[in-house]
Amino acid sequence: MIRVQLPQHLRTLAKVQGEVQLEVEGPVTQRSVLDALEASYPMLKGTIRDHVTQQRRAFMRFFACEEDLSLESPDSPLPDAVVNGKEPFLVIGAIAGG
Amino acid sequence: MSKVRVLVGTRKGAFILTSDGKRENWEVSGPHFAGWEMYHLKGSPVDPNRIYASQSSGWSGQVIQRSSDGGKTWETPGGGVTTGPGGFPQGESNKFAYDASPDSGKPLTTHQWYDGTQHPWEFKRVWHLEPSLTDPDTVYAGVEDAALFRSTNGGQTWDELSGLRGHGTGPKWQPGAGGMCLHTIILDPSNAGRIYIAISAAGAFRSDDGGKSWKPINRGLRSQFIPDPDAEVGHCVHHVAMNPKRPNVLFMQKHWDVMRSDDAGDSWHEVSGNLPTDFGFVVDIHAHEPETVYVVPIKSDSEHYVHEGKLRVFRSRSGGNEWEPLTKGLPQSNCYVNVLRDAMAVDSLDKCGVYFGTTGGQVYASADAGDSWNPIVRDLPAVLSVEVQTLP
Image (cartoon, rainbow over all chains, first blue to last red; front, side, top):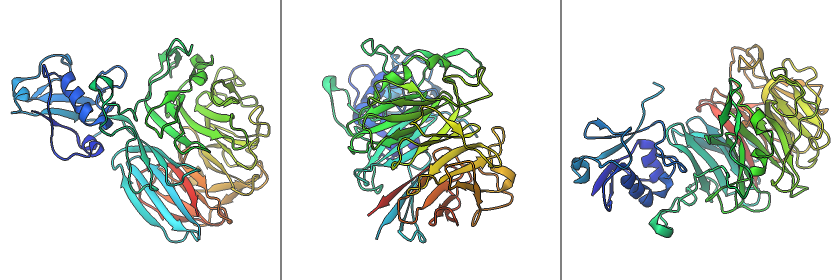
C-alpha cells in the first residue's frame, strides 16, 4: 500500500482527509503513483502534472524520506520505504509568496 | 416575490449573496473553494440553478466547478471515479488543450511577448465562463493565453473553437498587464450564430457562424501604445457590454477611452465625453434603458485605483459623452481601490439593480439604478468578478 500526502487545497478538491492510500501495480515510480492517484481521484488530473505533457507543474514538488525527488525521472523507482508503506510520498506546493 | 443572487469571485474563494427583490437584507454564503482564485462564476439563463465556476491556483492550475442547486453544492464535472478504455480515469473537467490537430488547420503558433519577441501559446486559466442562452449543458470559456473553448456536456470536456486563435493575426496579439486573456464573451440573443469576444491585448472579434470563423472588429479604436495606433489588432480592450434588447449596440471600456458601436462592432466612436479619466475596466448597461451606461473611471494605467481617492460610478443616460458621477453611499475620500473588468453586473428587476466589487473586498449594490449605493459586504478578499441572477 502506497501512502500519499497531498497539500491541503488538493485534499479539499479530492474530498479526502489525511493521507491517501493507493494500490500500485508494477514498479513503484512517481508516474505509477500519480497514475494510481488520478485513477482514484480523477478531479486531480491536471493539478499535479500537466494534462498534456504529463510534466510536473512548476510549483508542485515531490518529497520522500527527507529527499527532494522533484527533479528525478518520473520513471525512477521510489525509495523502498515508500514502496513498503513505511514512509509517505509527499506532494507539496512550493513555498512562494511569503 | 423576485429574488436576486449575486455571484462573487475573489482572490481567495467564491461568495454567494442573496436577497429578496427589495435588495436591502442580504445573506452571505461562503467562502466556497476557500483559498483558490475564483476568476468567474455565472449561472445559466435557461436553468438558473446551474452555475459554472472557474477555480484556479498558481500551484495546481485550472479546475471547473459546477452546481445544479444554485450554489449550495458543487461538483467537478467528469471528476467522479469512472474508468475509461485502458483503465484510465476519464475525469477531464479541468482539461483545456489547444486544438493543434492537422485537421483543424490551426497549428499552435506564437504570439507577441512583452519584449516584442514571439512566445508559444501556454494555457494558464479560465477568465470568463458564458453559459449558453438555450442549453444549460453548453458553456463557453475564455482563457489565458487567449482562446475560446466550448463544452456541450456541462463542463466535462472542452473543445477549442480554434478558428479564433488561428484566424491569422495571432502573432500580433500580446499580453496586457494581467496576461493575454480572453475576458469577454457575449452571445447575441437575436442571432444564434453571433458571438462577440474581446482579448487583452488584441481587441474585439465577432463570429457570425457560431464560432467557426472570426473577424476583428476594431475599426475606430486608437491606441497610442502600439506602433500603428489604428491597427486592425493589438488594442487592449478591457471589457465590452451589450444590452440584449438592442444587440447591435455595444459599449467598450478600452485601456483608455470609452467607445460605442452602433453596427455590431463594425465601427466604433469614442464617447468618453466629460469623464474625469477615460481609463477603466468595467462597463455595463441598464437592463431596461439601453442608453444608460455605467463605468468606473480609474486614474491611470500606472495607478490602478480610482480618481482623486473617490469611488465614483459614472452614469450616462444619453449613450455616452455626458456622464454624471454617482457618489451617494460610496467613499469620497482616501479610497484607492480598483474595480476589475468582470466585477460589475446589473439585475433585471423593475428598478434596475447595479452591483460592483472592488479590489478592497467590498461589494456595493444599488437598488435604484445607481442613485444610491450600499455595501453588501465590506471585507472580502479582492473581488475579481460579480454576476447577478434575477430569480422568480
